[in-house]
Length: 328
Ligand code: NAD
Ligand code: LMR
Image (cartoon, rainbow, N blue to C red):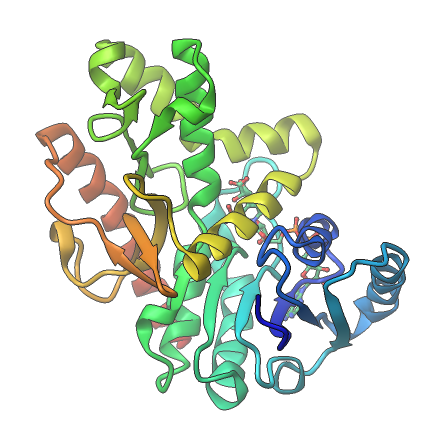
């Protein structure tokens, strides 16, 4: 166990995801017994509310919370940060697509990318949860030219967890039986949850279902549109499950994925599986020693190829839109 606190910076710290996320980080769900120092960024009007959240963090008396700093200046809050979770962004409302948030949220990530480039620790890892997560991560990465591109990722772990849970429920097994799940593409309605390469109790998942109609017309839409279903039911976008996924994604990136399994992370494409180089798209990855590797050699059938191509086309449209907005 390291005794030097890891500096964990989180944005949108007074928002609803962080009301769950910060307490999970501070309680050890992210790094176990390693002490953490929280660096919390908010916009100026939200700082009084954030002070209330900090009071509650103090009142939990978490043994491994080595300190909390708050502020509205990214260059101060990100100074020396090792792990950065960019959550702060507007959520969509019912009837909107996540990409409708691009012009409102995209510009947040130019300034934050530049600030990270200037002041973050040399080993920084940046995980973007704020929507549209993939393209926001692309903006942050593009504005932080001195940080290796492999240090940026966007959250598709919530989709990954949804895909596992829906499959387990269909087959009447525990979620722990489901491994090797992959979300390909964008964190959006076009994402492709891949049952052809997933396993249940070590055996091919699709073969155990063997129902293309259910797969195409029920399973994929349920997983892909789950965020919208939560908004319709709750009147607000997912928060606790998003916080859980954010913690799990950063935990695995920093500490490694279990042997024999992989997770879904949106990372910069190196051209694997025909995804154009430079886009931030979701892939199956394994993590070890603080780095991820895209799992190679999976067989993608024609159906899968079409689904991935459609999601990638959407990512390219978003990339063009932020280029036109002058954000990259
Ligand atoms: P929220 O509105 O409750 O909180 C967002 C917070 O961000 C607010 O407190 C706001 O003041 C703050 N903020 C805005 N601009 C900021 C800036 N420039 N710097 C720092 N903080 C800033 O929203 P939420 O429910 O916590 O959701 C946050 C984001 O996460 C949304 O964009 C939402 O769509 C997204 N989200 C993503 C996933 C995913 O799986 N990728 C899942 C759920 C939600
Ligand atoms: C989700 O998937 O729950 C989030 O991206 C929130 C949303 O807008 O759907």
